[in-house]
Image (cartoon, rainbow, N blue to C red; front, side, top):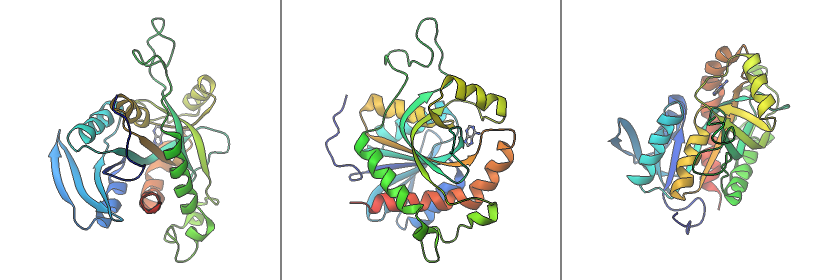
Length: 263
Ligand code: ADE
């Protein structure tokens, strides 16, 4: 495994966005980008906040995101990967509009039992992949800045985002377990079943733990940041698109900027 030798948030940073709306706000902020096409994906190489970045749409699902991550690491030589996207909230008190920073990730649909314990990644001897604690800490700090009252106030980074219009309260940042699988969770029964088997899970999505597995195997630090778009219940498919266009893309840009501006 490669050893991580450069400080976090320096060198070449791969930024993966899950939704085209989020990707677009990042591309609009890049002034010098050039596009390179690999594996049918467009990789935008350039600068954000003076840092060298490669921005790409992850695509949806674990395999697609794993391919995108592998190309980012092997063809573009990024030194770290930051994933930003939306997720369904699972944990108590994790509400729409909140942000979850992963300190651990599990593939909730991995089950090679009885050969291996449920959720264990065969060959890795564990089910749980953890981003470096220092990087998670930095990301948490950046998100906290973005979600502060100042940021939502007039002139702040999120001043264009009217959470009250969507009936959303002051958002919070959480740090904890994010689970990933190849399913959009769109039923209260399905999210209850996930909560039962993985009670520590704060959020569910479809890519993060796959990105984590690739980064783990290449020894490259990564972070996963998810804004809660729905509660993974019977209304998830209605809440999700509304939230992405009204809120998530603004959050992504503000969080990536706050992170890249940290020293
Ligand atoms: N991403 C956003 N909401 C989700 C949900 N309910 N299930 C899976 N992935 C999601």
